[in-house]
Length: 609
Image (cartoon, rainbow, N blue to C red; front, side, top):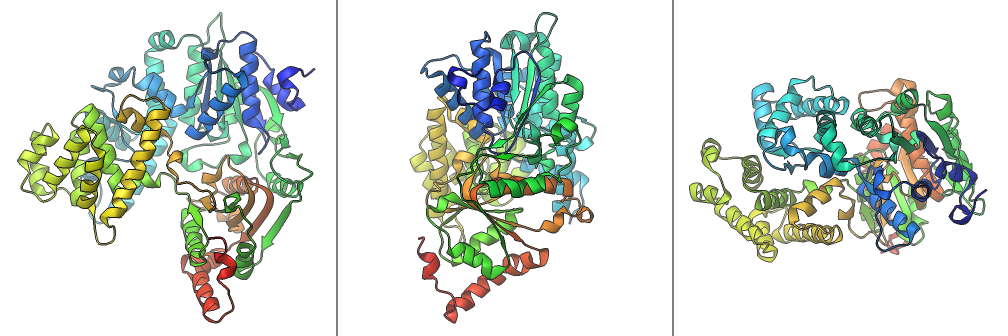
């Protein structure tokens, strides 16, 4: 019988929350109240004797981890409490395993996190192993090969060995390397890790459908570490395997079959959808039926049950460009409750141009976009060195970003430098080097107000004026400062490390703007109304390519269809229509002609501004 805090749970949620001392696989439908159920599961275990510090819960994004932390805090209704360890997998690996045991891994100091392959390494790699005129193609093959090798933890490729050797030599680390290195620490230093972390009772993984082989191995190794003849650590995997859409990162829904075979978990299903109107749930179920799960238990979780019967839902197929423009014209405020989804960044950026032409406010979500900006990359490298000391690889990257390349004089002599000041003394006659060293000096004393205008002036071009660069730097610094305060970090580099684990908080305020993003970016989000642009021929068996797998495309479509609460419109946009209307600008030209001949009244759209 459900009592007290469990009164508002469904029977399915209650059964999951109160299951004890068993491995669990929780198959949660979209909008099933998964996070709330996890909160009650944690609360139940603490109420029944587990110490909060003996529970670990992994999320895949910082945003999801923070939401779970806040809801756990509200659940216990205490300001001061010994809370469970809730973090992303990468954050846990970094803070609990790599930083404390960095010398065991061959690092001389705590390594600096880099977001991309260092430029110096890329240049050397291509020079030694690539063809002169095929740099982009070579690096694409290199990235794919190394990523797959790290995800599977095969370490069989020479390219992987060269990358790891370079990173160790220069005291650098990349995200793809964190989980494999954490696994190595646990396997090689079991007693030390166990002593440092104490006892673990439950290891929860949210969005478990997104695990790759290396990450699954990590949770399995953790479970083995904290299990002996007197105690068992239990694994809890929670997710919707119909939403496994990160194959390009190595995630594979079949991993969960491995979990079933190895741990024989209790399977619980959360089937009720508390998000979407019945019409939308029914439409999404039609696509869910076609998804191959490969296991009877998983197949039982395919169909969702609608609960929002009071919502007047609508599913509409867009018949063409005119119908698409009419859908946009009929938008109602608030605009931030409307999202347009597409399969690719290229298409969603083209949609942004259409909305701009119609003078409709929008926000284009592009993952980690700000971290790829030249000025931000330079700032991150400088902040790393001001805290951790001079790093030749980062210094070379700085010079290349500022100069557009590394002058021969610097390339042949930089090995003799051991500080940015020495670079200034040795190469002060080379244009832009003195200014770069001066910016570094200002950042050493945290004088951002003087450093940013100087750096902006140093990087300014005709296409990118100094004021635009300075605004970008100031925005980045503002968000970095917020992280430093919120996460109680002592130094800028600690705040930067926290920032790199999840860049979602870097997004601008999106109130009053239509949201534009890819389906992959939309995971875990919802809106009142969604327009989905997609080429449904990709679901055909004969459409399989190196980039599109029909099985995963079924899951991509299902993910998109389960984002709206009330209104869903979709346009079966063939490759030809996509190219004509969006990629080649046909829709924008049609809008311009409509305005010119009085067939389209811009005020019908610009009323949103």
